[in-house]
Length: 73
Length: 358
Image (cartoon, rainbow over all chains, first blue to last red; front, side):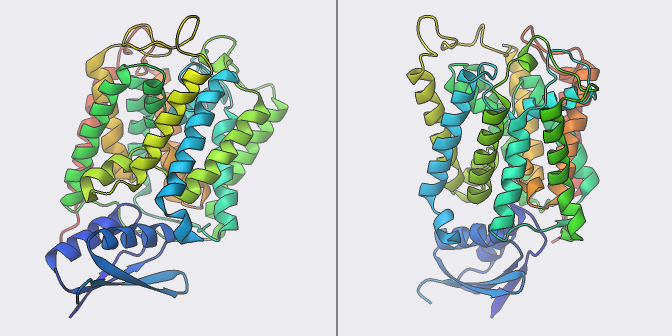
């Protein structure tokens, strides 16, 4: 199962807060995060890496789709 | 490119450059412990266009123009300029006004608070603890689901307004039309040469845009996500300013700085209101997502919500100096304390009302 977090349009620090909540509520699950800005991409990636996730970034137009996979899965 | 910029060494480098330049600005003419103060300098600009009539704090500070235009040019060049808005602009405006009011009760924004500490002014400690308490309250609301809603894309002209306003202010600064108010004494009459101030502003605007430096977010990230990325830039800023202050002889015999609470430049020792003034700044800025520096930078990147916040700062500065809210070196203004309480109640109310049901 993949959890999807859509934080497009939210400014700092809401993307990080919502991603953190999704990670904590769904440990060991893959989490997909949709972000709109470079800043959110950096911040969410930094959070995920510090929580032990690997991050895959796909760019789609003006948006980024981040796939967070728990290390060890 | 972007990965390199987001690494820790760059934000430390940016902090060092910013801290050193901020300390040097006092050598080049800016008021003591006020090499760069985003709140004070916006307040000075508010005065120069006559929106308040406090004669000692009226001057077009080119540093503000430089940092917004620096962020504009940098974001444009790096493809990050985006015209957007619509995330609770009215609430942002009011929160911005209260950030300014809190800052003017303490006498400094989070940037100047660190500079005051680096210049030996220990009132900065009271303020820092107060600001961290405010940030903590903001985190409480964030964890309860607080947010100001989504922004969406706007037509390009919206995002261009702030840079255009800054170009107009720059023309005012250069050609000095007769309707401007300019201080003849006090902090507003102490300034670095226009060219130096503008270039320093542009450099800081570039560095802060690339590294996302934020003097409130740094503390928030420590407590919210145990992340020390932003704070490493702030610590570097503080150390660089401290080293420069010692290196240029500002401490010691004949220097303008000394360690202590009393008799500090553009500072008062009313501890309760230094604490609570910066608590208001910490709380309101956490709800806004960034300190005055960060919002200025974002306003240059096409973010019209940040532009509304900066307009809020201007309104707050006008209110603070027109109605005796702002402090002075002799202590708090008549209405300063009550306005801080009103601000804290306003922020708490917004914090509760703007929760998303999840």
